[in-house]
Length: 224
Image: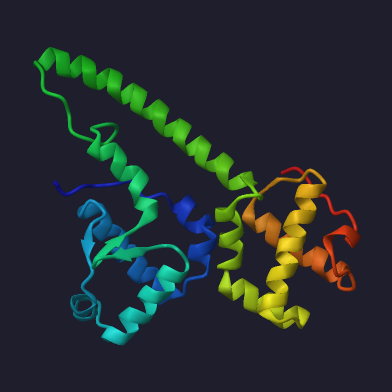
């Protein structure tokens, strides 16, 4: 596959809860792995020894960061091939010859006309995709395994709430599920992950004595 230049979306990077959990070293390696994924059609050979020499880190340091990225669901490794889920959608366009893919053959006049029409359509598609991404970030379905896992995988946030509220992690996770079920029961089924977290902490502080969702005081997430 030919080497590919690709668009990087700082807003997506900055609003990702999983990326938020990373420290500076982890972010640096993750960005390097994204570049490799885009250059290798998301089939990067897993070579921690080479990466340790390239990035000036020990193999153990590289492996520790790799494990951290895997636990957060940012990367996958199967049969010594490293795969990054967030890169796949962009690469599908390239493989199918859609926006960012190969140009079709034709005469100069046909190419000029086709490119003008394709560019206009491409801009429209890009705008639509950005709008869709924004909507997905602002209004995500709570009753969704991926949404719930993203909450439970926020290790730094989990540890912080446990420390502030004096709860064990397993108890806190049960409380998170109670709050999720409570919101669904009162008809609040969509929320941004950041809103969910902040409203959960408020709810938890006000309802420390309540043991089950049925006894929780109603809490309404305001429309964004």
